[in-house]
Length: 116
Image (cartoon, rainbow, N blue to C red; front, side, top):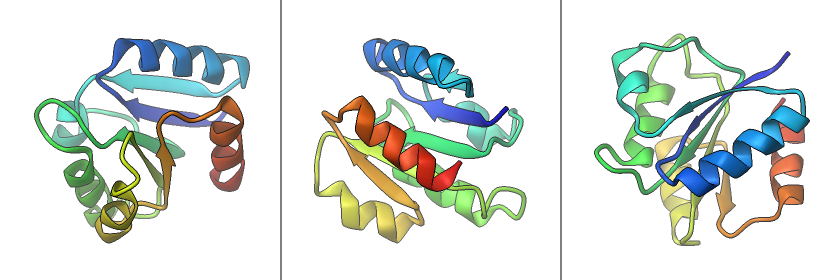
């Protein structure tokens, strides 16, 4: 079974994505901030799904950290943001793709199929 780590501080988005991944038979680990990622207190997934706008450390900083670590640098990172202006910032931080909110479940399905 594939494993995705979601870092998202919005409970409604966490809940809807949890249902989506459960129905897609993908194991999902959810964090409301990036502390566990930055401390290394997690099992590396097949893919990271990071919100850009988090309380505490910014999602782009988490992405840069993931991509700078030997153990995780090749794991795909998908950034999520309500602002299309995140696209060049995400690319500069090493993200593999971007989902701009609001997005349809079909958009998530398409992105996941490219990386999982």
